[in-house]
Length: 237
Picture: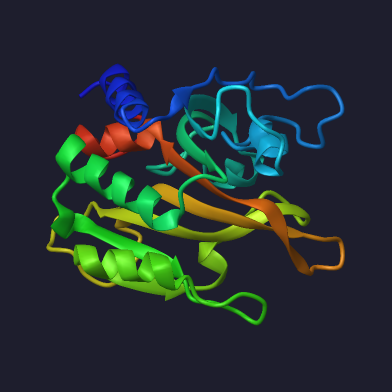
């Protein structure tokens, strides 16, 4: 399955579920933006995640070129590229996390043919400010997938302040043996898709306040998924 095939299947799957495709932004952000490069699909959508109505509605899908400076030290390993394409979906105050996770699971297994026995997921386990993500945990338990609870590894933010929230990550086993251990215990588990329940804003003092709406922001690396589906040993293959 080529990258074009993957993009087409991904976008059409979510268009069938009411999402409108939006055009990806340039790799260089607008003048005055605090980041050097567009780092994720959600970055250009920040105003809409904070409550501004989007002209195309509350369900969006796109493909965004990204350069993530925080990943540069890892470029050259089997899963990281300098510039990559991110497949993304958003719910701007529409559906909640379990719906997003269920769609993601069904696309990976039914749409892309991944054996569910090769999947493992992680879920936010709670900290002093926010409780555990029980709705995601329940969904994965219903699907019969092994779950690992973490704290820092399953909290997403776009910097020291701004929109943030718990996330649930889906991993695929790439080892030559049957799956073993957990994603934090064995790097043969490769992260495929991250679903962020973006519900909070972190303030300068570190406290959290609710966003005006509860959003979903997901990201799936196109080249990484292609290498896994094609049986390549790295994104460079």
